[in-house]
Length: 387
Ligand code: SF4
Image (cartoon, rainbow, N blue to C red):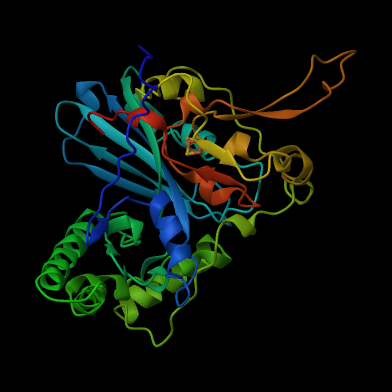
């Protein structure tokens, strides 16, 4: 008797009248929706920051539960937007992190190394001396605010939370706005499902009447006010916030991040200090404590639209900036063995996809928009139990 033909598993698909997309910053499905439904036609480009964060257990004698410290500027130059946060939690734990605007111009800049250097400041270093670093992580955040909010509904779905860009930048906080947008989206979708129609247009109207819209309106000029540098940004932010109460008769525009990068030859190289292994560390030991795991032997989830671009364009023009903006050491230019003290020949980009902490920075900052982050197989990624 002939054996039955091999069966292929049935392709599974999910069908819903309405889908609420809540993918967080730079959602990969949301990116497709933006194009398919032209959702960004009437808003400014989204602008982003990369936040890098560590959790520490510190000497109890230095711990002050509830203490919060924020800084701006150092160690970056005054043209680059960013600053730190430091929170003393309970149980002698401290969260420390650094956010850098991804519209930075110098391709030699490494957000990871700026953060490591920040911890060596004489006012910061003593907090961590004799402490123990417990966890590490990184994630892009949406900084565009009100001007960059896309159309929020389309036939069959709506966008909520940071995939739409509801973060309040000066507060570095978006959980409350994400929750509010989710509640309003749910109400609009339930009302739609009870009747006719395919698009929950009432959602955007409800948002505009909510405290969320008022809150984002008041801070809309803070982030773009820093386009001309730290000092002017501080002055403009002060005028907008303290003199005008967020009701300035103007609204500054946002710009996209990937096209802000200058050529490597136009920018000064940055010499970062070597990590000391006490308060500052390298990328690989950091990735290790992010508990990142991906199923082996899967196709890389970092897709290059054009395989030639990293070496033909990014390397000569920008000195391969993916090697520095990725906070997990995923991208490496490798070469044949060097001979006679010369640089090795045959440069090529190696993608160590298993190290990826899913921050989405490469998808945002690559100067030619050649990198596409897609969801890896098997649900892998970083595992942040206490971040
Ligand atoms: S590969 Fe991209 S998404 Fe992954 S850690 Fe690096 S920059 Fe972030």
